[in-house]
Length: 167
Length: 391
Image 1 (cartoon, chains in turn blue, brown):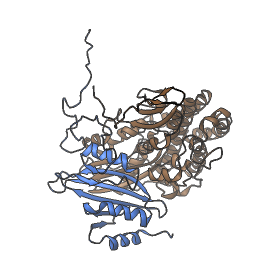
Image 2: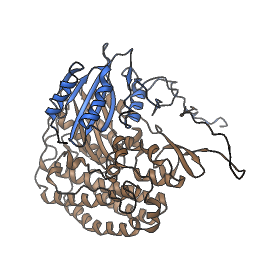
Image 3: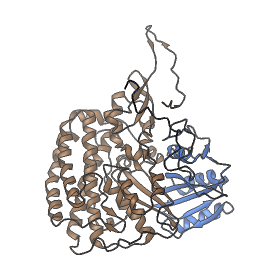
Image 4: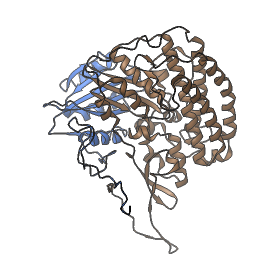
């Protein structure tokens, strides 16, 4: 298989997912595709099977703090053969924070999706083990949302007593 | 205290064996306070006798939400001490990555002297970090002497850092657009004398540890990570190269001035066992130290004597609105920073793609079927730093 260029890659994506791609940004160092939420799973499957993006580098969320399409989830893909990076971005509403999982495509999505869930409360449908990864399991808040205060919410984390009882 | 809800684990019913003995699966916790987890990591092990049938890592004991702190900083340079504390045994590489991200966002050009000092520092730090990884890996397995040899060499590198930055572990030396201060006058002689004395020490390390019979028995054919699994799990750095994948960002996607230097990308070959076993991951680190020495020698030769290290540092760091991703090859793998700027003096969002975090996620896949004593070798060979896993 020949190495493909960035331009060919973006053209192929535009041809295949014409109605699903909202925008393609290619002004920075790496191309970024803004995608409709419902197409993310089939898009990822297409990238892996047809365009050799066998390496999922990262998944992370962002809180845009807007009333519409509040959260963003960015998928960072890498093709070792073509030496290309691709960022795929989906935007979701605050009251419908569910996305399909991509753990069936790349295993590395497992922990990364758990981190997004832990920090932003975005759930991934079909994830095999969607538990909190950093925070305790009974923690009620999502720390990286913009409304969460930097110093935390008093009482939300149970801490051990500082003075020993027998003192 | 909190009860952590684990995955559904149930003790299997005692099984009636042929000779009348009853056996039962057992669950033990390795960590959070365990000397060979290199930090606070808890691995929940399900054991069938001495064989591991399931391993579930539990992380988050060191979590301090680095990304939230970054958003609260009122100036970008204040983020740099925080990135130091992510991978605290390779702080110079972390700073380098963040500085590159900001310089790309603000389109700052650096002079050659700054770039050369940065590369020399980054490679020295890589050697120091690999020495620590290799030394403690031997220590975990029971070889105490090589650990002391490694640490005495690492000490010399820390001395060089101390002379330049004043700190031995967390430097805050590489700044956005330049360096904290210029290197001392005897920097070149210090580094070249280190390079000269360190080369024979690698051979010594190979004689002591790499080809040691006991070490070979403990690491060959243990924790085999096949190439396909490694790529599927997103492994990077020496752990990926140990599985035979020739992928190094310094060569394949060069940043800074790495494209000017000649060096080889070391990959595992399965010389003593299966490709991708613990020994392969270990030997990649040892051989990478030699490659780093090559880079340092070339950089020392071409380093210009003139040049102000402060000349490109902006007075006020207020990048244009936008998003940037920059990646560097740290001793543990690909460290990426995704910075979103909203045109203010503090970042809107910083996401760090930490190599240790991703590398650790492969642990359940490669430890099934291993003996319980080999868990120590497997964790040591992935070379995680918990400060970076938990961020």
